Image (cartoon, rainbow, N blue to C red; front, top):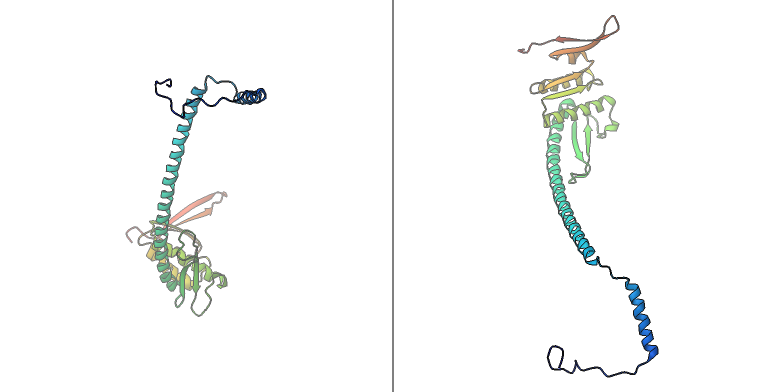
Length: 239
């Protein structure tokens, strides 16, 4: 019978006795002592340390899971922002490109101007190039145009932005400085259109530009060497 009161089975029967070999038993003793030495002393605080490590592991696991969820949320936000940027940029490009063609044709009668994407379809990385062909010329690269023509192309692009995305207030700093009288007259016509819905603050030395202004503000030097600001209203609010 076993200790549990159950009958012995073939597996429970005592093993066959083996002869006692002292050297063999001494070898087993040395192995056991070495293993015991490697195991070290019994740590009575092992259970407490295990519980603390388990709690720390659980805390770090939760933190890691939070980081993974946060990373996923951020990636989703990035995708949403990218999609919105693509949508806004694509719409803005179409609007500005359409306005640029019209403004360019007004400032360069008989010429052709357009905006071209450097990487079509890649809205997050593409650049925008300006192609301009004044009347009577075959070139389209800005670097081959004269200084006055490049200045006028820049003005055309600037006005295109204004028309595509209107603002109640514009500041223009000597944008017509390099223009001749003919091109200046065309630009002033566009100024008149912009002023119908927006307020323009134009810094200029051109007399013709000053003549179309509602008010003039200038800085002059007084006799005592101190700068003074003078103003003159050319038109009444009701005009």
